[in-house]
Length: 54
Image (cartoon, rainbow, N blue to C red; front, side, top):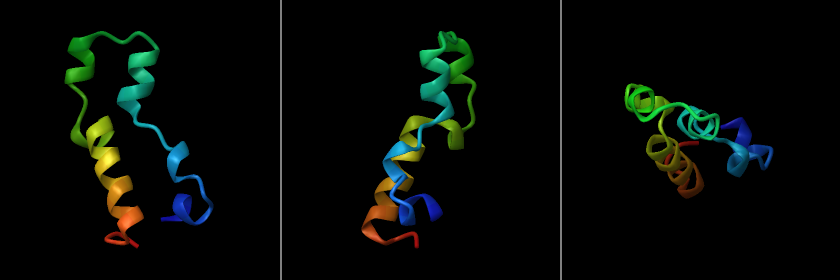
């Protein structure tokens, strides 16, 4: 992933995190699809750091 090669992997943030900081309500946060959630992004970042995802 390009962000890892550029050293920006830790700068990536989820839409869920941005929405929470913007004051979006829990109902709308719960409606977010999996790929926009913090848990999903954290899992992907871990896989990239371990070399599972190139």
